[in-house]
Image (cartoon, rainbow, N blue to C red):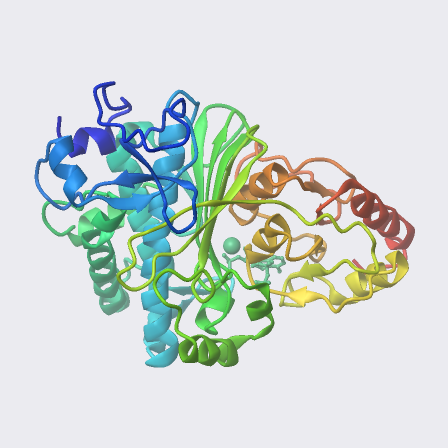
Length: 452
Ligand SMILES: Nc1ncnc2c1ncn2[C@@H]1O[C@H](COP(=O)(O)OS(=O)(=O)O)[C@@H](OP(=O)(O)O)[C@H]1O
Ligand SMILES: [Mg+2]
């Protein structure tokens, strides 16, 4: 059996796989082939193999195996989808780190474009979209993959965009060629420009109430990204209108939440001064993921340097329910959410801490990890929230024990197409029910006097 079958087929390996019985839980039938136990973190981890070799037997693959863990059972629904999605997001995170480094440190500003709505788009947005689209198509077959995603190829295909397009093609090929460290088999030859454009434009699903589709925000918080700050890569799987899987890559969100307070260059300089050692969780980013109904959410560190060990740890929302001790997060940009309105809400609920203003869906990650207790977003009237800005974050918070609704207490509806239709006033995510109710009551009490 070739590795390709493992990656692209829906079948799991045959039962004759070598299972390392040093695992403390032999009943866990991981969909990875080699169960083992991480000597450092003492968590169960599973080998994946170095896939850049043409065809390997499983025994051969074991020799150069690398470590990635996904705590799920081979028989569980969506196990294969989760495995592929987490790997794809890891690949995308490394891609973005490299592009951001060039953009911010080397002043490669040419690779930032403006979209029709004046929001920025960079080679990272298109490259991630192409890369994730290609990986999903390889894994499940192009005909089985439907993707709703933020970018299209309109501006990229214009004649004056040729140098950007070639940067995108190069970035995608560089990224896929090193994806083997995650067990993803790279293309046999570099992707042609047309293949890259096709991978991007294939993400043209409009979602809807039935069937299965992926939702991708290739770079959420592009403004944060171009400013050298926080951003996220968000991938979710929606089935019959319900988000069933969510994966959130946060390349600049390290283990230690204090780092969030250092914005822009200051944070970067600090992270450079204190380069993480390869096994450290402190300095590098993270990938969070969850599966609907599992009542568990997980976090992995990003690979750094030559490190090839990744173990996942469970995450939980904060237990704080006293407003005096709680912290709320909100968008950095006033244009995206009214700071004035949330300031009033904070005052009436009795929140005392300064708001944590963070770009992108990293805010969802902060709630899921227990670094903050409340996330509020109140966009201007008429703004229509897109499903890719929320899908992955919602399922991760919910499975980590939190609550996400609109201001009327209804769960967000991912079944109505590209937009979150029918959203009542704004979005409120909380660690617990008591804080959530307090915020909703405060919104009711002050909404009519707000200018929103
Ligand atoms: N006017 C307005 N109001 C509300 N929301 C908007 C608005 N404009 C954009 N967006 C969307 O917001 C995404 C950025 O995340 P946040 O809303 O959390 O804002 S911020 O990054 O913290 O400033 C951002 O995602 P990206 O485009 O992927 O960066 C947008 O989809
Ligand atoms: Mg976004």
